[in-house]
Length: 133
Image: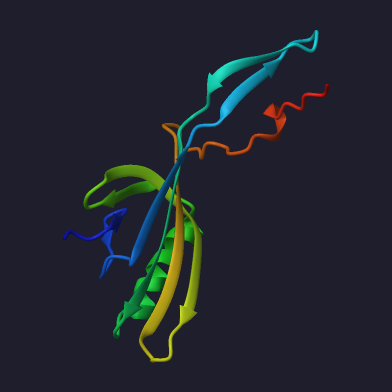
């Protein structure tokens, strides 16, 4: 199987897990008279998470590469060998050193970016509607 890639960098070994969650939240608007109207579904927001292990002499360098993507905050193509390409940015990275000198367990999260390079918002507090009876 091909390797998972981000911004031209390939994972030395594919992560053990890859989870994609897709959400489209309803959007509402409130008129001056207090009437609430359903406006449709918001932007598609995909979050990609997973876990893996970097092993061998290049384990630390592989983790540092992922860390550099997080530090830059720049979006780029995330290419899954089966599910295709989405434009995303790395938003979370966790690391745990293993018992061996060259063993790093990691977890990551990517968020899809829109055509302007922004991350669509989830759980927009301004759009929450509370009904009282």
